[in-house]
Image 1 (tube, helix red, strand yellow):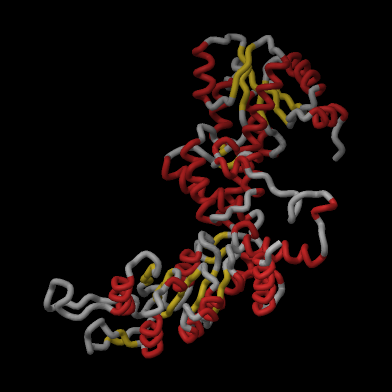
Image 2 (cartoon, rainbow, N blue to C red):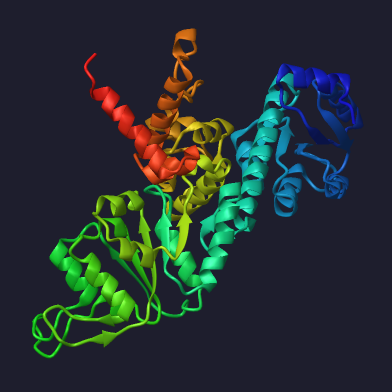
Length: 472
């Protein structure tokens, strides 16, 4: 339906208008306000009783109510209470000829959004209505986003609707029913452990242990003892042996986090244990059988590590039965807002704060930021925003400085003058180096993005390095 001339004028001026219901027992007052508000772009219905007003609400067309306090029969304050109970999404603006503090307090307690005094100043009433409509629409948007977050398809706790995530879910569904080893790759902060736990919960081993071992934070000797255990007499108790993670995870899933950092001296020992499914405690002839499904992760270019000899090729092949690569957050589009809403609700609940969503300006900043720290950085961002905000919705000022001040580059190569273009060979060089920078030097990932085989990419990178070393 086409907008009326008054609605069109209101839209052109940027004013917020909507459908309102007037409630006043004086029909002349209703007609006068209907005419004046209609000129301001509002759609106006009116009735002279609170009982009739409640019957008009079920049609779904009313966005805000303007009601006098003193009505014949049910009062305006009682109408507020009834609306708050049956239609809490519809704000009520109360009109009163007695602008006392007691009346104001009674109106707010009854559930009124705002109140104005009679005789009505039209500018004041229009501002109150615009605020009430804005409040209603923000609450509606927040509720819709919460429903989207609650209903969105995913895999366990892994959330997202973008094309890269839909492809990931298909991969995860196939991997979950398999018992083969899984190697999860991706940048730091993309949620590799979350995916590993989701795989475990979706597998036939879901009722058995999920045991995690971080391969980066422990000294080599301690890491080796945790993997393979210690014999009797070395734990302080002469009758007790130190149980290794392979035994603790038996029947379930062993999660090896950042396997690319596993020391070279331990790699052949781990491979032997996994192949034979037998753990040998250090300095002991005892052997202990185990049965685990291994899920490993790495943010390193593990293929390059194999070629350079820093990671054992046989172990890599054993782990790389099913390969799952997680997309960076910057490649997931509107998933950023879904995740932001999920984190916001979580931290608002923990902090017991009534924070329901994001302003449109804050959402735009989140979408334009490249998120080098991926999902982990976004979660920290939302935790900080919830802690700082004093409003119902997180705004730009509540975001970290890096997010607030980031400006998306207009050009992939920087600059827009003719001198910035150069030869096709130079553009290729700059693009390849730009991709290498974006993936943190991960050559295998860069080759996949560029559509090159790794040898071709290595050859080009070697030539660029040699050219950079040549004297001018």
